[in-house]
Length: 379
Ligand SMILES: *Cc1c(COP(=O)(O)O)cnc(C)c1O
Image 1 (tube, rainbow, N blue to C red):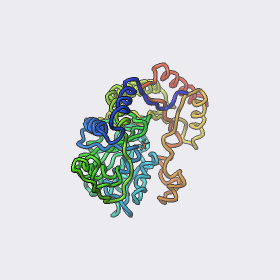
Image 2 (cartoon, rainbow, N blue to C red):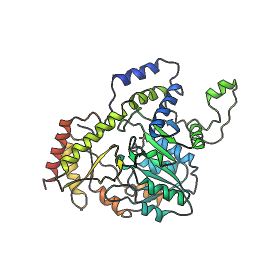
Image 3 (spheres, rainbow, N blue to C red):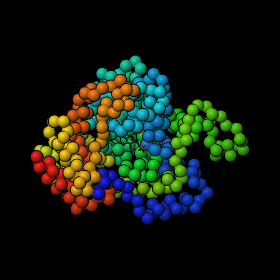
Image 4 (cartoon, rainbow, N blue to C red):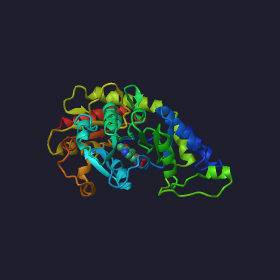
C-alpha cells in the first residue's frame, strides 16, 4: 500500500538521535532550545516553544491567548479535531464557520458575521498547506481586537505574500507528526513574536511552575511556585535532535512535495472529472496534502466507489476531513447541526487526498494518476 503520507528518516537522523541518547540530557536539555531557534528562525519569529504534539501546541496557543470560560473562538468547519478541542480544553467555545468551496479555507465574510461581544480569537487553518487570506484575517482581528492564531500544522514552509505564514498571526502552531513536513515522532511547536506569550507557554508546558530546573540550579534554590494549572507537554532532547536533523532537509522535502504536486496538476489538467483545489495568488503552497474533487454533486457515493477502488489497488487515498458538524460530539457540545455548512459539506462528499510525501517516486505518481483517471471515467 502506498500511504497518503510518510516520514523520511535516514541514517543521519538516526545518528543524531543516538548521540543524544548517550549524552547527559534526555529531556529539557540543550537540543530543545536549538530546535526552537531553528524553527523560529525559519519562520522569521523571535520565539519557538517546543511541545509534545501539534495538539499541545494549539492548547498552549489558546492558553497564551488567555481564552477561558465563556470566550468564543472562531474556527473553520473543515479541520482536524484538535483545532476545536484546544478551545474546549480551556473552557472556551468554538464557533464554527463555513469554508470557501474551492479552497476549503475559512470564509472571511462568514467570520465577520460570526463575531460577537464574546469573541476573543480566530484560529485559521492553512488547509492542505495553502495559506489562508492573512491580510484580511489580520485586518479583521485588528478591527475587532481579536487574537489571531494560525493552525499551520499543514503549512510549515508555506509563504503568503512573500512572507512565512507565521508573520501574520499572533501565535502559529506546527505539528511534527510523521506525516507532516518534519517529524519528531510526536511533537509540535508554537512560534510567536510576543515575549509574554512565549513565557506563558514555556510555563504551561511544565505545570506552570514559576521557574525551571536550570534557573533553580543557577540560584542554588529549591523554591518554586505553581501559579496556575499546567501540563507536562515537554518534548525530549532526542526528539529535538531528530527534529533538528529533519529540519536541515526541510527545503528538499518541500521541493519534492511541490514537484509531486506539479506532476499531479499536469496529469489532471485536461480532466473535467478530477478537479484539484483552487490555488490562491501570490502564495507558496507547502503541500502537506494534495486534495482533488471527484464525482458529481450527489450524495458522495461516486467518491466512495473511487476511494474503495483506489484502496483495493494499494493506493492509500484518504479524506481530510469529516466536517465538524458530522461528529455527534461537536453537534452536542457546540450546538451545530448537519446541513449548517453547505460548502464544507458539499466538498466533503467529493474530496480525496492523494499520496504525497518526499519519498514518493515518479513512477508511483504515474501509477496513482493513471488509476485515478481510470476510476473516475468508469461510471
Ligand atoms: C496534525 C494536525 C494537528 C495536530 O497535530 P498532532 O501533532 O497530531 O497533535 C492539528 N491540526 C491540524 C490541522 C493537523 O493537521
